[in-house]
Length: 135
Ligand SMILES: [Zn+2]
Image (cartoon, rainbow, N blue to C red; front, side, top):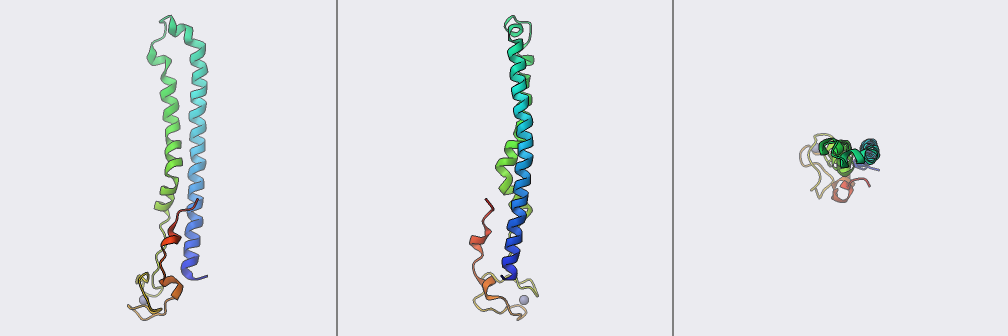
C-alpha cells in the first residue's frame, strides 16, 4: 500500500461517514415532515364538515400541507446531495511529491522533476478511477 493508496482509502472512508451522517439527518427531517403531513391529514379529515360548511377558510384548512413540505424539504435535499456534500467536504487526494508537493500525476519516471526525490511509481499512474464517490 502506497502513501497515495492510504490517502485515497482515508478519503473514501471519510466520505462514507459524511454520506451516512447526511442520510441520517435526512431521515430525521423526513420523519418530521411525514408525521406532520399524516397528523395534518387526520386533523383535516376530522374538520372537513366545518370546511364544507364554510366555517373554516381554505388557508387554515390546508396550512398543514405547507408546514409538512417545509419540514420534509431539507431531508429530500440532504438525501439527494449527500454524495456532493461528501465530495465537497473531503476532496480527493492528489498525487504529489511528498518532499516538495509537485504534482506527480503525469510523470513517466519515478523521480520528482522539481526536487529529484524518488516518487513511488504507483502514484505516477492515473488516479482517475479511484476518485469515485462511495456508494
Ligand atoms: Zn519533489
